[in-house]
Length: 396
Image (cartoon, rainbow, N blue to C red; front, side, top):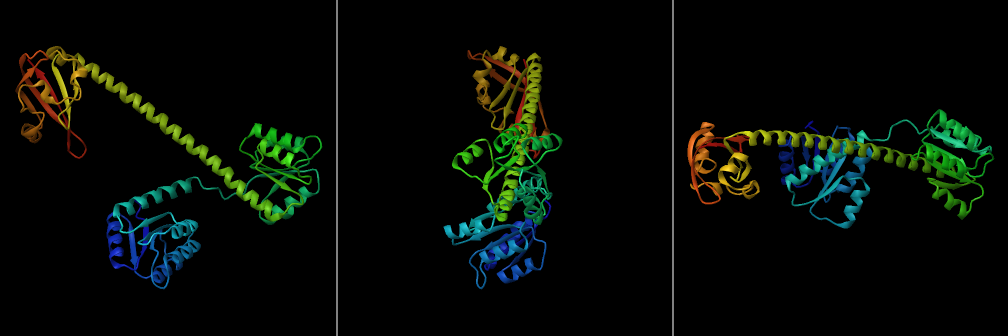
């Protein structure tokens, strides 16, 4: 827990107190106010809050106004809406202002803590995979003067830098030297037209965004362009707002695909790591079982419910059961006595002493024969000192 700063705004003092106490106990730094204007003033002053939790219905200024103004001032702030009067309209409005979640009253403190944790994890992932600040690498392919206009006037005014190629063949030569994020190509060109260039680009890098532009639009050429993987199809003369919007939207899509691939690769690596670790654990378990089965003494382990989890070959030979006949059964299945150190008061005594030795018990075979066996045993606790089971070693 990094001690993120949280601002709570709710006109009900009991809600403010509940959230402040709960979230402070959870390790957060919390401020709570019962006045929306006071809370918003803190945000507008630039106080560094990571998370805002605000009610919707409040006097003078409601939660939606707070949400809107807070997002304008601090767009990366996590906002969680709470309300006792949920409605589809407010849900949609909160979503429109990029609220992270919408929680209805009466509040469950655990739900609020869980929501905050999910929001922080989501923000961490978003920051890790955010679109870089550097502009996209753009190549304009056109044999006409419009390429120069598009590069210098339209894109240049927006801070973009674009290289120019006169035809498709020249564009492919550029691709051999460097990669481009976005290619804006004319459809009708000498040497190599836009569709052939589109096909060649997709063969080299399927994620490169290709925007086709043409002065001779047709349904057939549009369908063909999209069929071959074009991101968009724009008609000349070029409208500056249209091309800029298309580039921005396309670049977001480009990085979403790139980051999705990164995330999938990470998940695949984690999956492989889990498989490798499981394989190692299985190997260790097999080695342990081999050693247990080689021991001439009887070995039995139980879980926290006194059900049999392990039984070795010596026990099987003595009792006449198959392992699968006893696995998961109560430890009482193999003893004549109902009182034994695997459970109950004797187990409690063993916990105090740490182990037992030469504990006499009568084992019962699958044919009803009774065999006297001296047992030694010890519990195996978890990290919180709770008993997860008992291991017993018996000798005739």
